[in-house]
Amino acid sequence: MAIHQRLKERNIQLPDVSVPAAAYVPYVQTGNLLFISGHIAKKDGKPWVGQLGTNMDTDIGRQAAESIAVDLLGTLQAACAGDLNRIRRIVKVVSLVNSSSSYTEHHLVTNGCSELLVYILGEAGAHARSAFGVAQLPMGACVEIELIAELHPG
Image (cartoon, rainbow, N blue to C red; front, side, top):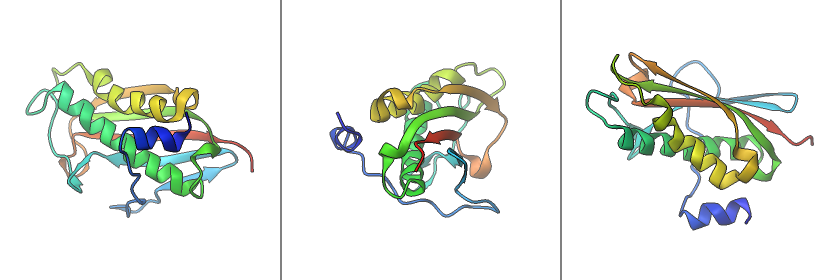
């Protein structure tokens, strides 16, 4: 099944690239590698605020991470001039989870992003990954995720 069919099947419309909230660019390409800056979780267009293990549970965190995957795909689409088929593979995903010191399910939260990337991109979405717990994220967001993608030459 093609990428656009998988997006349609999940009723996903990719957003435009968000304007950075600080002094950085949304993505940088060097050679065939594309580095996508961290995207925070958003709900209803605003930062999805919360802390896992304090006032959010793993299932909600997972939904937040999945919402980030949609935003990341939107940025990837913009970086690829509208053609997600240019993605050879997602190389690495780095996930930061705003969490209490006793919270230990960062990996399960991050699965929300990872599983959607694999569903939408197929084998090209399979990636190496790190998931960390942090004391706080910009604007109080519950999750922030960045990624590195390899593009087909051209």
